[in-house]
Image 1 (cartoon, helix red, strand yellow):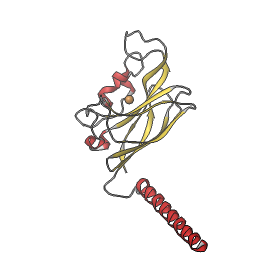
Image 2 (tube, helix red, strand yellow; image 1 turned 90 degrees about the vertical axis):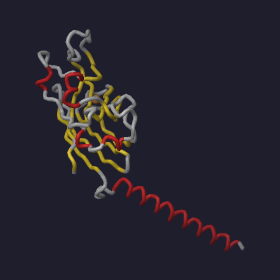
Image 3 (cartoon, rainbow, N blue to C red; image 1 turned 180 degrees about the vertical axis):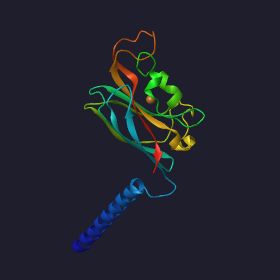
Image 4 (cartoon, protein in one colour; image 1 turned 120 degrees about the vertical axis):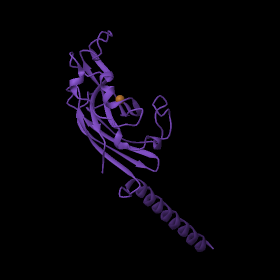
Length: 201
Ligand SMILES: [Cu+2]
């Protein structure tokens, strides 16, 4: 009887290993199958704004109603808070990255001056305090922000992701680029430092 019990235990153990292996395979497929035609796969290059020196790349993959967002922004100010968002227009028309020429006489592109190009926030993808000069993450999102034009709806409602851009914020500047609002020189969390247009792959 002892032998039989041992064999039963080994059999159960083998089944458990097999189930674990199967689960791991399924998980890998869920995040690794980039060749499926029903997925939107967008990539973009972060271009600096406000002379920030920030560069890097982004990727947004729509996986069954879930946006997997990867951002690697190099050269962000160290030991500071950096917001990042998916921006777009309320009417879902094509968003773009602003040209620094819209910054006006002060030469500082404020978050407001960029709005005609990139539009309001749809999804907040980062609000991170970085411990090195790099904002890097890989996160999933299912809902738009409650304050976005889609008011907390499923990210499916965003439609074509190619109409959106990703903006990274936060740098030290003389002010926030808006005239006469009393913002003092220092770290301006909302100041745009990089922007990436999303292009389908
Ligand atoms: Cu933003």
